Length: 491
View 1 (tube, rainbow, N blue to C red):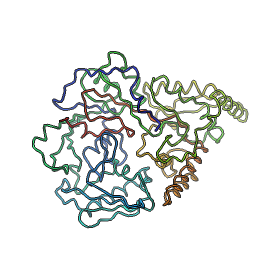
View 2: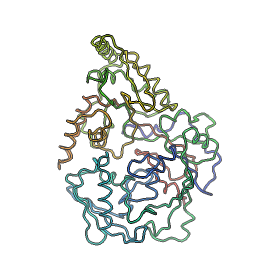
View 3: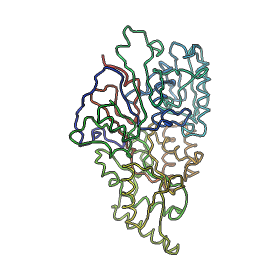
C-alpha cells in the first residue's frame, strides 16, 4: 500500500492521554463535518453520514474496527469456485418493523438499493451483478457476470444498507436520537443485533454522543478534554492540531488509499492539449507538497491506482522516474514557453477550486510556488465559479484498480475523461479470467494516464484524535471507524 504502517504517528506527538473519563458516561465524539452533511439522507453521503448510516442500518455484511468484512444481516456466506456466485445465509430475527427477515424480503431490498445507485461510481462497481436470487429459507444468492473478488467490500458500504417497510429504526446495531446537532447513539439489545442474549449486557456498552463540528472547534474541544474522539480529519485541518510536548492526545494517521490530486475540469488555455496538461503534472515536486506537514510514511505517486494493490500487474510504472525534478521542470518550462509564443504571449494562467482551510491554503501556496518555476500562474477560483482544476481527496472503497478507474468514468460527468479507458474497464468486467481482467484494467489505467485528465499527488491524508483510554479505534486503509466498536467497553 501507499502508506507504511510503521510510520503512522506524527513525529512530534507524545503519547499522553489527558484526564479522560474512563468508561463512565457517554463517549463524546466530534465529527469534522457540517450538520447538513452529517445528517444527510439518500445515497451521496459524506464520511460522517456514512458512519451514522453504518451504525443505525445494516447490509448483508459490514466493516469491523480493523476494516475487515464481518457478518451483519448475513451471518455466513460461501463463494463458488469460479467466483461468480456469493451465497449468503441470513441471521435469525426480524426486520425492525417486526416483519420476518426472509430471503425474499432481503432480495427485494438489495435489488432496490442496487437500482438506486445507478449513475454513481458505486453503481459502476456493482455492474457485474447480474441477478439476486431468493433461495430456500433464509438464503440469498448474488450471481455475477464475471468474478468480483472485492464484492464483500462493496456490499459492506453504508450506502448498501438494506431497509424494509416504513422508514423508522434501521437494522443496524444502534438507535439514534437527534436533538438539534447532537446525535445520541445507543446499542440495541443483543437479540435485536442478531446475537445471543446475555445478562448484564448493558455493563459492556455505552452511549455515544456525536456532534458535527468545524475543525477548529473540534480540535479545541479535544485539547480542552471535552471530547474523547475527533473523526474526519483531513489535510485542510492538520495544521490546527497541537503536536507539541503538551499535547493531551495522540494523532492517528490513517494508512488510507485513494485519490489525492487534481482533476482537469475543462480544456482551456494550457490545459487544452495533452502536452500542456502533462507539463503541469511534470512541474510538481510531490514530496515537497506535503513536506511542510511533517508526515512520516506518506508515499507520493504519479499513478492513478494506488501503488502496491494486491492484483497490480505492474504494467503501469511511476512516470518520469528516469529524470530529476529539475529535468522535468526544464521540459515543462519549454512547453509553457512554446504555448505562450503560439498564443501571442498570453499568460499561462489557470484556476483551481479549493476550500479555505489552513492546510489547503498551505497546499495552494506550495503549488503556486512550484508551478511558477515553469511559468504557470495558478489562481484560486472565486466561490461558486467554474475552475480549470478541482482537488480530488477521496478514500477508496476497496483495494482494486477498478475503483480508481471508475471515479473518472465519463458517465459521471465531473471533469475530463477518456471514453477509450472506460471501454477497456467495461471489457475487463466481462472477463472471467483473472489475469486477462487485470491486464485490461492496467491498459485502461495507462490510457487514462496518457490523457493527463488527472494529476495525482499521492494517497489521501486522513487523521483522527483519540485519547489513549479509548478502545475500539484502529487506524485502517478505509479511514472508517464503526461507532458500535467505539461503544464497546472491554471486559
